Length: 129
Image (cartoon, rainbow, N blue to C red; front, side):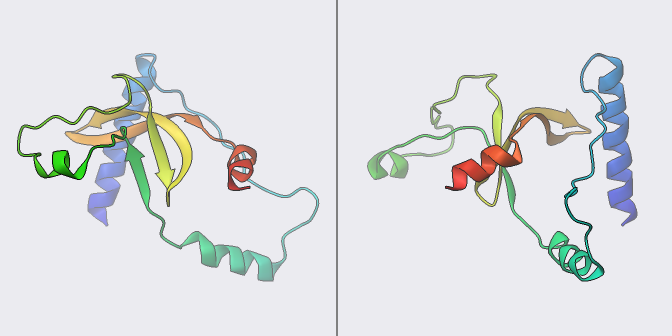
């Protein structure tokens, strides 16, 4: 657990450094709440239950379609051309659903992603239909 705290401190320090150089900006996020109705104790308990459900988050650099013949010929040093242009933002997916775009960052020899554009809840719901 202390390892996680150290890692978070390193990320916080790196983000603070980026802010000083014109990189990332600190943003105050509003609490999501329904103004029409107050949440009951039972509803809060149910919400707390789902907040701990693990989800899979993945970053997609790009995609390519190749034949099985070409796939079987891949070996160390092979290059697979992707449909994306270098420098284009990555897609951030949660359980296969696009939620944001971002750019790769490196902090203490580990890769991370800085979110540059988060898809709004309304847009995500529209895509479900």
